[in-house]
Image (cartoon, rainbow, N blue to C red; front, side, top):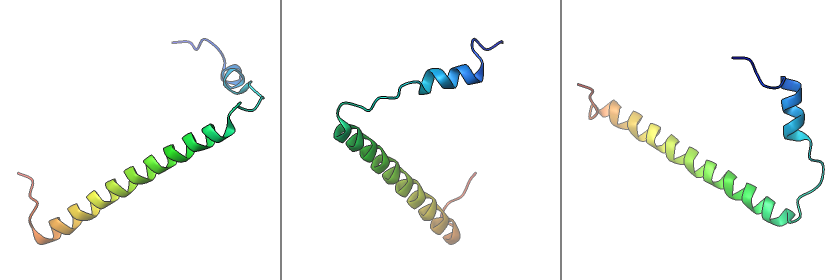
Length: 64
């Protein structure tokens, strides 16, 4: 498949807007909320890995 536009033109299309958003507080709140969601997801996944490693040392988890 051939690309429709070159990589440089695609970057320009995505990044061509130079003005600030009208409601900067709402944008900041949205970004902050997204960061919190990712942190909660990361903590949850890390706790699952930790619990799995802890249980596997006791021999409780087996794959058969």
